[in-house]
Length: 410
Image (cartoon, rainbow, N blue to C red):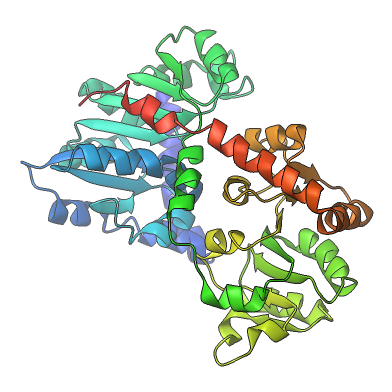
């Protein structure tokens, strides 16, 4: 199986170079890896002490951030090395300030794994949530380097738990300890003989709790809101927007809407704006304009949605009409805001929990969306109660970072 895996990886690495000629994202994936070892050698000396964190993409980075920050705080003499697999993570967070060196993870070849660990020579390694690269893990085991999985999630349908999963189960034996999010993950790991497992919870709760301590003021959002009821639509996709535009066009004049689409390409933004009959303005147009005179504010930039949620009276979180489903609910939840989402949320534990607790409402069609938003706008008691459920849920689930750090030592 190892031979087959390495052969497929070699073939894929060559094939990706061809595909990259036709895909900007794949081109970033390929080109971004060309200078990794040079970057590492220029920034890491043989005498440096290092700790390596790996995140598949942006979501995993955000999930692991509380642990990275605490480890950096506790071990200021160590260099933090952060790797990403996906361009959607690296390109957005390559200039982060928490890591000393941030690079793409070279493809999981035997040669790359050996060279990477030789240059980085980490004392400890953290993989965030998932991504199990057999050659890296094998070399970590060979060099007896402590390796941890944090905020891990395991399900019975994964290859580790199938009759043909021996190759992948062997990779798991590398880990010194698994810190998993829930009981079911612990049980499936124990079913294949792993007892080095602790339920620590989800570190994302620790990250979002810190949002309350940060400066979230955005003067232009305050000016737009103008003390009127405001619905913030975050990470929306076309199917979400189709329903929401219909609602906006029929809404009362005293309700404000802020739309932060998942896709901020000019054509997509133009399409959304053209369908809205209410007065609307783009973020890129906001200079020298009386924002309070508009009813709809479309955010055609990235990086400010979290702060915008702090101004919301109601949040609609997009993605719930697609696959795998709804986007991050925890950011609006931590601000104590009632949340509305689409029907596809079964892959996300926090969404399942919040729908069950009735802090979040799942809708399937236009009629249900209209009813949900109208109820929350018209019934202040209902709105505040659902918001309280959301904020309490976040507060009750914090603490994973401390649990992890209390159980590891460098």
